Image (cartoon, rainbow, N blue to C red):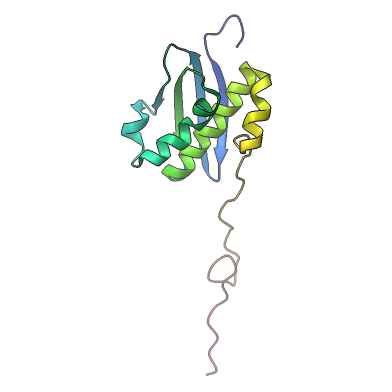
Amino acid sequence: MSKDSMYTEAVGRRKTATARVRITAAKSASMLVNGKTAQEYFPLEGMVKTAFAPIQLLGATYAVSAHVRGGGHKAQAEAIRHGLSRAMTELVPEQRKDLKVKGFLKRDPRAKERKKFGLVAARRAPQWSKR
C-alpha cells in the first residue's frame, strides 16, 4: 500500500472471469461484490467461502471491494480469490508462500476453443453419411 492511497488493488482472473479487487485495512473482514454483499451476490455459500479463502487462511481482516465481470458465479468467486491473494501479497510479501502452496496465486487459463471452418464445433466433424 503506497502512502498516498488508502487501498491496495489487484486483478484476478479465471477462465473468462475478471475481478478487480481492492482491499483496505479494517477491524472485521467484509466483502462487497459489484455493490452487493458477497452473501447476496453469490447463490451458494460455498462460493462465498471460496472468495474469502485467503482471508480465512491467513486470519487477516480486510474490507474487500470487488468488481467482477465475465464467466459464471464459480469462476467469478475464484477470480476474486486470485485477485485478493495478489493484493495481500503486495501488502505483506511474507504471506506469498502460504498462498502459493494452496494454489491461490495460480490463474486458471482454460477457455473455450474457437470453432474452425468446415467443422460443427471446435473439433466436432460433420456427421458422415454413406449416401
